[in-house]
Length: 508
Image (cartoon, rainbow, N blue to C red):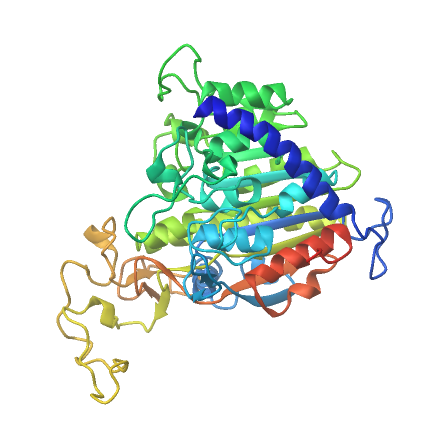
């Protein structure tokens, strides 16, 4: 399967480049007063930053935790704000699915189409759709893709791969990971376009869509992937393994390090700093100085380095996507402390991008999220939520089965010990079922107030352990940023970023 897929990818990559190139050269007269030459075009670069799972409350809580009620995180300092609706659609239709996953959301802004949850770079009818990064690359822009997740994970994958299922990451093919199931439980027939069932790692290593690739996921790749990258001129940091060994393990592969990244100078660079996702910042800070995870770069460091590598590489400019993935992953676990720390780490990357944009003057910065995760809430000090109760609140209106809005107990009522540990994360912090309020001091609190105490002013809780359908915030800075100050669909972001890069609306 691997050798066959490689041959298919070579053909498909070439066809994709031609298709992408034609898509961006047709009707090439600039519009709205922009100019075709690099020297006079207002927007040369687009940096698109995603806080995975980051809802409006995540941003607010991050502000209050680190800067106080009257402070601002860096993304809130950007001059244009709006909202993004994130729903997906059901497979094989246009019927809305109100709660999206990262794959569907990323396909929406990367390709401009609504699709089913778990789809990467295909529409709801399993038809391959060109991505903005593919179009930018074909048009001569430098391109980059950065994430604190495995680089084969849904959000980064949707810019430079196409798969029927997001789980088809690699290193090897399996029907279970790569083929959707029919209603009777059998697997669908393999599509004519074999790229759609080619492991994402294999696609990334051969299609050359991103010039700079930084993140995690080394275990998804094999030695032949490194060889394929090096043949295309990539500087590969670390090692994808020994081609003489039948299986690639932690012993045979070498993760890249921050020191490797600091020294990187190639026009094309791939750096994978963990065999899985990168280490959560709060956990990394608690490790001893000689721990291998201490050698991982932060998201802000990867953002700055990727900008440095991409800036000036092309007369056209560059397109860069940067994902803070761990906001979502720690929200799934209902871990408020690490969620807040990851919001801060992501916001540091926003500042790095914005600092460059301010110096450059021709860079658009867009900051948003794929979806909200877990119903993150700031609750009144001294209270806790219905989600912690031993049983759901009673229906207060028998005539309306949807109405469960009034609690059936006082705030001093019994809590479910399996889901609640009281006012602090405490001993249940590592349990995904922990819905208890977590309390944090803020800069506004009196001296001596500690995290986890009832005196701390910031009380946080979750409503679920999964995604929600809430709209997410969007912030923008730079030339053309005003067009993002709206209530919009996530598919609209594709067209707006396309217009920013190419000076016109996409065809179709």
